[in-house]
Image 1 (tube, rainbow, N blue to C red):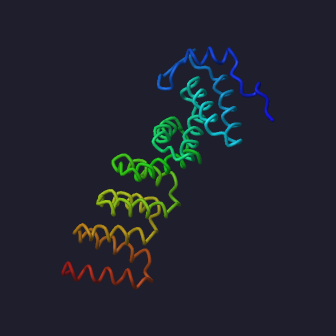
Image 2 (tube, rainbow, N blue to C red):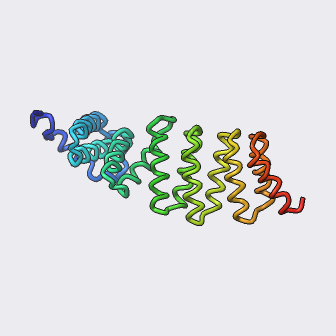
Image 3 (cartoon, one colour):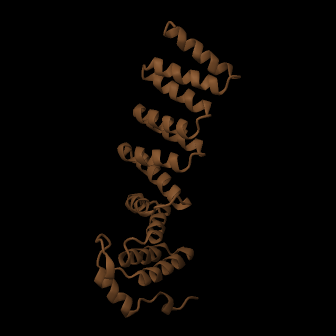
Length: 226
């Protein structure tokens, strides 16, 4: 059993946290206490490992209060909220973590993908599309996420966003014939038949053994009377 001295907040820490106040104030220079932030972060991790999530949240919040740019604490707090399905609280933290992270890490890839998914689920499509396109850039080998994104947008009547997603997918995986075919289908749906034909031709060129793609090209050309 862990003793109270592990989790008890000493007077020095208390005074420091009182100085910093709430989590929304940007602090610089001497008002940042990185050592205290690390201490609270480690406590948060301990509570999280014990599945004492309420207490973990409090410690992560204290860590961020001591150092608002402490990206690991921000990420762990966001992940805790996400695990607890407190998505509205997780989203701004994920956005802050993405803003702070300057290198492509597994944490950044997960944060961008998760935030895009959460915004899509909330039908905040103007926000989600930017994160989705960024997610494609960060993780180009994940072709399944591209179809999920595009289908969500298209089914929601946001065909132009689905088109952006498939164009981004083609950019990162240019050899993917099914992306070109899927993009062509949406363009055809939007009565942009000449553009659809271009994509069907691209799909056929990428997969010359596909009779299906060849037939799409021929059918579309007949419709355009070419």
